[in-house]
Amino acid sequence: MIVSLGYRKNGFDAFGGEILRKENIARWDEELRCDPRGVALGLGEEIREVEPDLFELLPTINSVWINNPECDLHMTEKTAELFRKNKVILRGVYDTAAERLARKYRLRFLHLDVELASVGDYFEHGNDTVTVRFREDGSAYIHQDCRCQGSAPGQTGGGEVSFDIPDDFYLSMTSDELAEKCWCTKTIIANGVLAAFMEKAKSKGGCFLDFTTPDEL
Image (cartoon, rainbow, N blue to C red; front, side):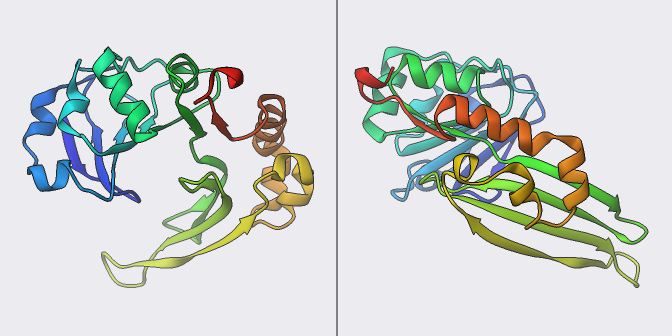
């Protein structure tokens, strides 16, 4: 198991194994594990289990990114209390462990970023990737990334562009209207990923779901 400092988030990313154990987290300095700004933990798609009480080592945990649809966090009562106290956001995909746990333990759910298209070849003319991303407050934006091999050995090129979209984009726009604002428009329309995601978000009532009160269960 590998645990590294977080990518795009303050905290840690775990990957490279099936079970994340307390010892994997305990190796890190307490200053990082207890960061008062909050700690996010990203769980790679191969992780199927998190050892019970692991989150006691992360007392300022504020979000968990769950890439494996069936990952078992072993939600002990202590863990559930900590998550509710810290108003933890569980990030995942609809109808998977992240949403089910958020519903059961009265937490908040935020959908993971959604890749809409990836076109081209990095080694030839470059690769363009378009993704719907979400900030911790649930606000949405489009991130567009171009990567290509540079002219010198080991050199890379390209660039990134982002723009905000309405938080209720799945209601206020059609998928084609949003695709028209993005790179790879034809691919996004043709593959149907954006259209399917927007339809699902509409049926769920949003990309950010707050289950913290019983009336919203």
